[in-house]
Image 1 (cartoon, chains in turn red, green):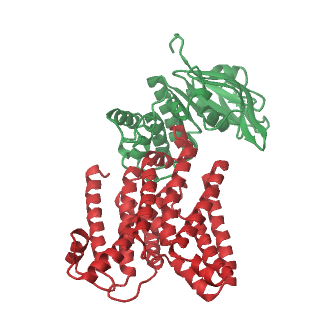
Image 2: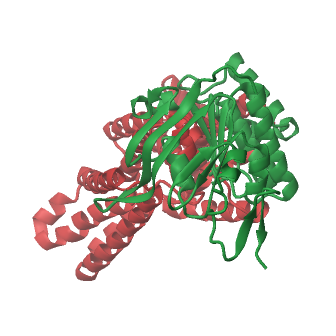
Image 3: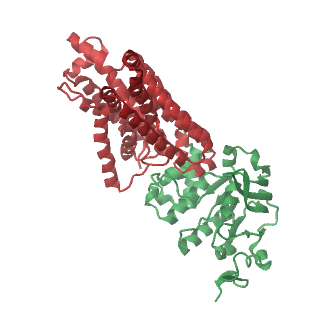
Amino acid sequence: MQTTQTYRVYFVVLCLSLFAAFLVNLSLGSVSIPIDEVVKGIFGGNASKETWNYIIIDYRLPKAITAILAGGGLAVSGLLMQTLFRNPLAGPFVLGLSSGASLGVALLILGAGAFGGFLGTALVSEWSLVIASALGSFLVLLAVLMVTFRVKDTMAILIIGLMFGSVTAAVVAVLSYFSNAEKLQQYIFWSFGSLGNQSWEGILILGCCTFLGLFIAFLSSKSLNALLLGENYAKSMGLHIKRTTFLIIIATSVLAGSITAFAGPIAFVGLAVPHIARQFFKTSNHLVLIPAVLICGSLLMLVCDTIAQLPLSEYTLPINAITSLIGAPVVIWLLVRKRKLLF
Amino acid sequence: MTSEKKQITIQAEDLTVGYFRKKENIIISDTINFSFSQGELIGLVGANGIGKSTLLRTLAGMQDKLSGKIYINEKLQDQYSTLQLANEVSVVLTEPPASKNLSVLELISLGRQPYTSWMGTLSEKDKVAVNNALQATETQELAHRKCFELSDGQLQRVAIARALAQDTPIIILDEPTTHLDLYHRAYILKLLKKLVSESNKTVLFSTHEIDLAIQLSDKMMVMTDKASYFDTPCNLIEAGHFDVLFPKDTIRFDKTTGRFSIKK
């Protein structure tokens, strides 16, 4: 049994680790900047070199903030899905949101080839990618919500999400077949995920969406706890199942949808982090788990991003590859150690 | 038993239960009439598929009735909101808790949900109710164990403790004795009997342990495909309602012992 005291210690440790990871993330990269200079750069003003200032404020800080928002948001939406579907393997993308986003982007990039030449190039700008992927997620969300109101069984929603995934994969395959290598590469790069190259306006929008999603999630803590007993029990304790399902799906979609729109589909964070957090905070109480998962997700994402930028080299690895390389072994390790995955 | 008139807690008038599917009603069981009172332990028996679970789920408000009237504490069930009903009726279902990662204490505390604030944190009053539930079901020593570590018998006691923590005048249990050995079946039913006599609750349970139910229940309800009968066990035996519970060619009911035996 763990008391509030233990939780407090864990939270302090987690917050300190998060801050440390944040500074390390800002300091490492193709150019290494000493930590004290990083602190100077973000808090007071000016680092000793003008270039460092520029690198920190215009390049690394937006990337680090995106990592924190994306990691935390995806992890919390994973937790919501695992509880809603009462399935330890559920992640933020089981609703087919990333499929929707992929489809939107695929239609834009690969489909733009059809318009040819100038128009095709003009269509594929930074913001059009964000809009296409947000639109794709949103349409899938609408479909899922419509299904939610017609179907009683949450498992059916899960399967429908998976079916959206299959349909998307098929459409993308068809589009790929007819498009040229250049377009295909552009699409594949998007699917690698990317935390960098965000404008401050973009981060503001992402921040608002993440905050909204987290707010709904936190307000739903009590309902989420009730759902741990199953829908029938939850209803017998006075829970409105449909309203709760609706709210949780909205929260997940806002989180996963906006993050996918800005950073591309990022794998495994949503699936693995809730399980990691449950290892430390041995509780199922969402009032504790949601903040815990949020911080763990941000921390993991910062660490992954630090590795992805390959310190002291010119290269940056795709973030999606790093999260999968770290996430998959963690899930396997949990399974082997506990012999079963509980949620 | 005292002679004073006890308040009626659940009453059904010409109740029909079943499902509504493809624009037509699938009737599982109809013309059900009964009235349960405070301080009564009621055993519900009937063959598989006769509609016991459907009736219990309908009474607990988990599925809609097809026709007829249900009164909960002399007010129509339809007039209760989900939350109001949660203050009157608690349930123990056949399904295990969806998350087995919950600790026993967490699970039982969830029973306080109808009374807690939006955050779901427990007040002193809630903690007292949870403690009472732990004591009544003798689950104190399990409090910090996780559900996946419990045996079926322990899990059933914990499920009953959660319903007790919900502190409702009516508790409905769907086959609380399945998967349990003879000792635990008797233990659970005696526990229910004790709860009824101590707390003046109405406890309704469905079971296949007809002989145990006959010994312990104050009233019984026998569901057959023709009709449902509600009375004291003795009267039901006298009227021969247990005889028609199952097809006669395999087992028959012995009126003197109150038991079924295999027909040789």
